[in-house]
Image 1 (cartoon, rainbow, N blue to C red):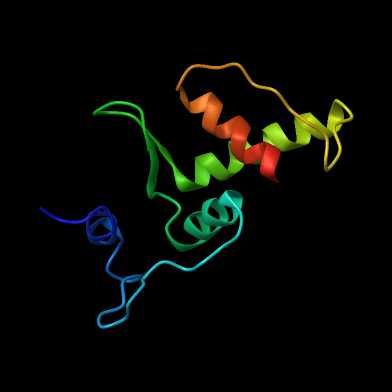
Image 2: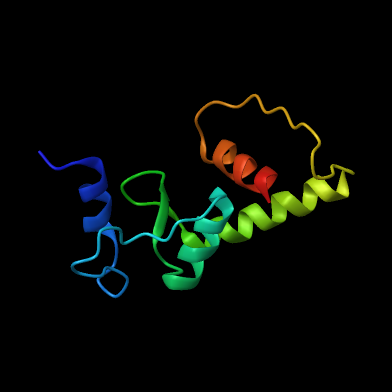
Length: 102
């Protein structure tokens, strides 16, 4: 059985994967940095799988999180403020989480 890291690495596009290196993913501090990285590297990379026929691409996820983050600013939410979300495990939860970290 493959380790979780190995399964993730196998899904990384070949142009990004580097043979012989210990880690193929860059190290970022915040989750939105990964979203921006994948939106730049491969905009069509499926970031969220909704069903067998519908995915949210890295570019779509970046756009949605920017819009949500702008909405927080429009509501007067500032860095350091607490945001409470009560959502089931749906894409909007992840989008809200990433937007809040921006």
